[in-house]
Amino acid sequence: MQKPDVSRRQFATLITSAAAAFHAPKLFSQDPAPAVIKLPPAFHVGEFTKIYDPSTPDQKWYINDHTFIHAKDGTWHLFGITHPEPSKPQEERFFAHATAPHPMGPWTRQEPVMQYDPAAGESLVWAPYVMQHDGLYYMFYCGGNADHGDSYRIHLATSKDLFHWERSPANPLLIDGFNARDPMVLRVGEEWVLYYTANATPEGGNHTVKAVVSKDLLHWEKPREVFRTPSVGTWGGPTESPFVVHHSGKYYLFVCTNRGYSETAAYVSDNAFHWEFADVVGVFPSHAAEIVATPEGKWYVSRAGWHQGGVYLAELNWV
Image: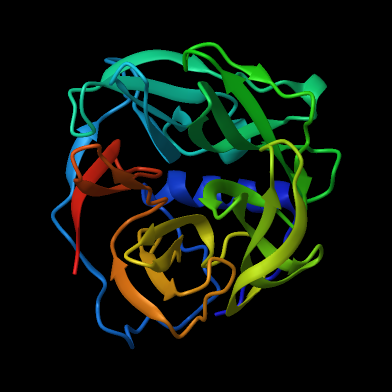
């Protein structure tokens, strides 16, 4: 069923009210068809295990879009969107932070990081992605801007220790489409590629994944559409939380479809800049999935979200 387009604030009010009333996430996607695997499965996903609950003794908290990073000293760090239950997306204004000796834990709660900065054009902070390059940690994230209609800014902050962060003077790195957000970065050849969820046009249109390229992680250019779904709309849709993995000569694009809130589909391609909607090679129950590879060669996939009780991991075994 098609839902009418609404403004960002109207939609946030609707989904917050619905989640509070039914104590369960609501369906975002406008794509009515389930993903059908037409190619041989590329991987198997095991049973999910809860690894971290951000709640305190007097308050239940959730973590939504999140990221894992293996620090230089061997410690694992987790950052993510957070807020007390029930969900209030427009009030998600800093990131949860936790540390552990291994992705499976045990995880220790740390002080939150990256309090939103209205002076930097931020009305919220969403969907961090953290990576390390040349001894410096880079956090790409979405910073909302209430004065920019229904678009969002993709911003950058850097850190030397993963506890103290400074915003880049190059911000905003990117403003595109109806609500460009959920950044993820991959090295492809001699360039860095930043993938993000977007729409075909600034007014909405097909839900897509887009990409820009950079030589220095600061200046991004050549925006292009790399994946398009038949679903048309503005907010939400089946291309949230894109994550790209290069494995055995293939590029795998994982996106949160939002069918039933907790579903991720994976698509395969020989090209880091193009995936076809028909080339789906896996579907599994996860919202805001991240793929984690350990130095020992183990692979995991995560899930989290509103009313999920924390962050979960499952083993991912490539076929």
